[in-house]
Image (cartoon, rainbow, N blue to C red; front, side, top):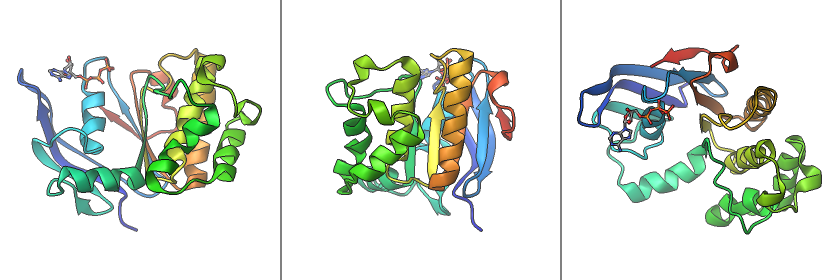
Length: 209
Ligand SMILES: Nc1ncnc2c1ncn2[C@@H]1O[C@H](COP(=O)(O)OP(=O)(O)OP(=O)(O)O)[C@@H](O)[C@H]1O
């Protein structure tokens, strides 16, 4: 079995000294990893490097064994759409689209619109009854669950979640994380979770920044 995601010898600096150097990680299909570190330690930067959203400075990132550095941005964007899903601290839902339309949005980009699959994801996340609500009528936890459904809609090999529960209370955070982990297993996605919260990473292999 080859790794879904691998990073070797990663180093990055914004100009005022290195944020990290010589960093390595690897994830197998359906594997998980928590990136743990205080605010400012470089979690978001690392996830952006892994997602190919920030140019690599030192080292290399491999998606399913292929180095991403040589790819032109247009190819990277195309590969990203199929390879990975992203969930951020803020949900970034389209305010004028319903929960279901938000989940289907990547399907329009990829030419794969399957309402039944979108609805199944929402139901699995406990939002079947709210599929036709606009985001403004949903709670913070519900919006974040819609964002998780949207990120998994194209059945990515990898889900990158950057502080996805930072705006939720502890109970909601645990619930959203638990559902996210279960659904990743079902969809077949590996999971990288970035968080500053030690209390949330029980059961995860941990990389400390
Ligand atoms: N575009 C940028 N230019 C210069 N410095 C930056 C830039 N983006 C981030 N930084 C700095 O790099 C450091 C790491 O930032 P990053 O957002 O990766 O950390 P983080 O661990 O995700 O933090 P948080 O938990 O607060 O989101 C911080 O000190 C930040 O101020």
